[in-house]
Length: 115
Image (cartoon, rainbow, N blue to C red; front, side):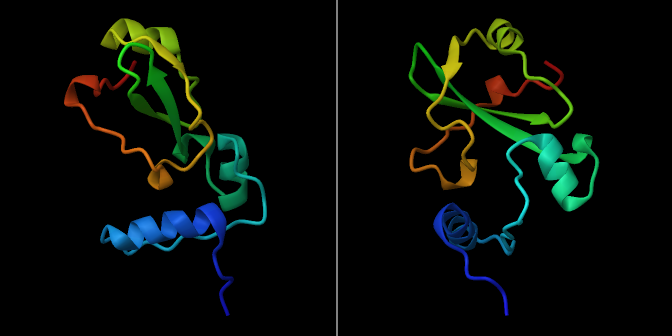
C-alpha cells in the first residue's frame, strides 16, 4: 500500500493531475532541502538536480523563477545585469513552484542560459 500524500506534496500531486501530467509525487524520508541532500536521497549526482529559486522584481512586484543546476551558485547580480530586473528574495523561497497560489508568468525575454 502506498502512503497517502498530505500537505504540500498533495497540492503538488493535485496540480500535476489537474494539468494533465501523469507523474507521481513521492515523499522521501530524507531531507531534500538542498541539492546535495536531494542527490543523496535519490542516488544521483548533484549536477543532475535542478533547483528552482523564486525572486521578486522590486519594480513590478512580479515573481521571477530561476532554475539552475544543483552544482551552480546563482549570482543575482549577473541575472540583474543581464535582464535589467532588480531582484529581492521572495516569500516563496524554498517552496515547490508547482503549488504556488500566485501564477508565475513566462517571458521569453528572460530566458538567458549560461548567466
